[in-house]
Image (cartoon, rainbow, N blue to C red; front, top):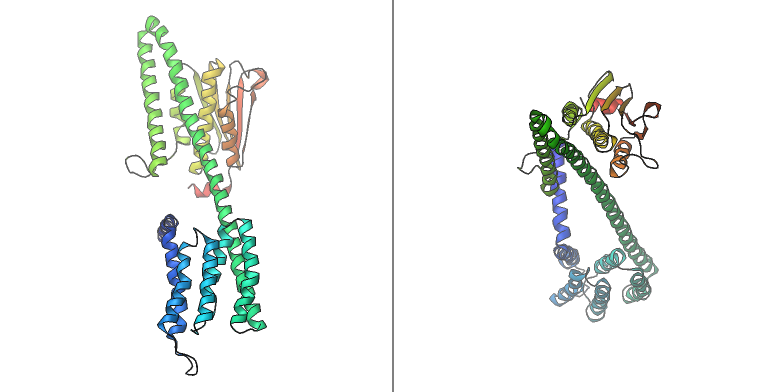
Length: 391
C-alpha cells in the first residue's frame, strides 16, 4: 500500500509539473469548464412565458468566456473584456441568466493571485462600479447586490491566498536548494580533501622511499592509486545522483559510507605513515544510515586535518557508546591549533558542526589533553526511535 501511495504521489507530481509547463493548456481547460457551467441554463427547459434561448444568446455567452484563455498574460485586460461582453449580453439579448458570474470571478481571482498591488487596487475600484451596475441591469435587489459583493470578495481572497501559498512554496524551495548546495559542498570537500591530502603525503614520501627503501616506494604509489580510484568512484556516484537521481549505470543509489567503513578509512591513513588507532567503548548497536554517514564524514575530516596540518605521529579515534548518545573523539599528538585559529578552520570544521547539528548534536574542537596536540569532540543523540528504525 505504501508503495502504491508513493507511485500515486509521484504520478500526481509529474502531472502537476506538466500542467505548470503548459499554462496555456490549463487556461484553455478552465475556459472550457466555465463554458460548460454557462451552458447548463441553455439546456434546462425555460418558463414558457420567457423568451426562448437562442443560438445568438449562446454565442454571445461564449464570447464572454473566450477572454479567459489569456487570463495569465493580461488579467486586467481580460477583466475589462469580460465585463464589456457581459454588459453587451444584458443590454442586447434576453438570454438565460447565470446563477454565478463565473467569468468575472475567474478574472478577479487571477488578478488577485498574479497582479501587483496597483492593478489590484484598480480592480477593486472598477468592481465598485461594475457590480452595482450589473445588479441594476438584472434584478435591482439588495439581495443580489449583497450576494455579488460576497462572491467577488471571496474570489479576491482566494486569489491572495493562492499568491501567499505560492510565495511560501518558492521560499521553501529556495531554502531546500540552499540546504542541498551546502550538503553537496560538504560531501565534495570531504571526499576531495581527504583523498588529495593522503595522495600529497604519499607523493612527498615517495622520492625518499625510492632511495632508502624501494619496497616502501611501491607501497606508497599503490596507496596513491587506490586513494585516487576511491575518490573518483565516490565523485562519479555523487555526480550520477545529481544528474539522474540514480547511479550512473541506472542502478539504485548506493548507500553512504558508515560505521562499517571506518576500519578501511583508518587503513588508508596508516598507509600515509601515521599510526592510526581505533577504540570503541560501550554497547555497539545499529544506527540509522544518515547517522552512520555523519560519523564517517566527521572522522574522515578529523583525520584529513591531522594528515594535512598536525605533523603528528599518532592519531586515535574513539567511539563512546552511551545509552542515549554516541561520543566521537579524535585526538593526535601533533602541533596543536595554530595561534588565533583552529586547525583546518575553513569549510572542514564548519562542516563538522553542521553535520552534528543536523542530528541535534554538537562538535567542539581545540587543544588535546594537557594542551598537547589537537582534539575533536562530537556528541550525537541516539534516540530509541532512531535506533529501532535502523534495525
